[in-house]
Image 1 (cartoon, rainbow, N blue to C red):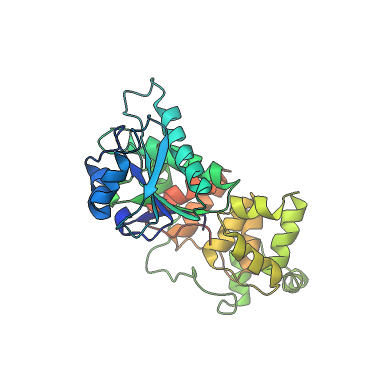
Image 2: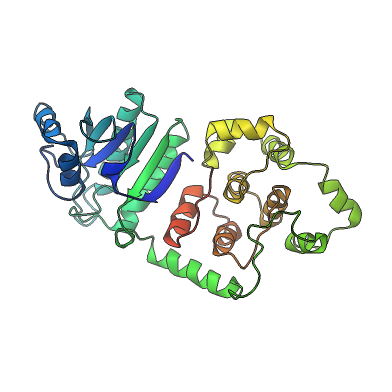
Length: 324
């Protein structure tokens, strides 16, 4: 998928480029900056000495040397001073400058740390939102895969109010863990009466048989046309790779994964009943025995179809992310 959030050590990732949260001098430091310099070897520092530093919010590029990444993009995030000194705009600029530099050098895969959220003191939930929003907006116009790398769980948080609201929604809807989950059952495994129940209102026999005539890919393409969207608008909003979408378009019998089917329901901004129907075409159903399903349902119920915000929440609750 174009934007992924992962827990990893950025210095071990085999990418076209990794991004270094650097100081203005570009001469190394602590945290991610120090780790990248140590892993790359002294040649990185030698090249950085020739760059003449970097202003806050801008980016410069070097070779990766001993890193598995081809390039290191060095960007300088803002120091948090309360939020009234242009910190947000500078942080947005740091991400955009890095992404633009990656495009200039033909990079297809880029990994970012959460810039300014460590020693520079930017509140982590706000830093995360800036990162996700800025990268997400950029990917609507560019084809590349971007990884937002979270080193450990303690370094990650979404907004406290949102987390509490989702947790409460899960508590209200989550079926006891001993209840049989249909989360990963295909329609062939679920009796017809159970399928119809999962889709909400009971269907007549004619309606049920009629649904069998339209495949997932056919329904998806019909919904795209009905909403006046282009293919690219849809798969980008769904956080789906263009190659995967091409497979779905070319194969009338294509069976997507559940996160992929859910992602298209979000991209099309389907109300809950239509989302259930699209999911059913892929052989799945919403289940209140699945936290993944309940979290996605929460956002649909609140008419929030920002897939990157949904993925923030899914990541926070250790669930699979939407996309494919």
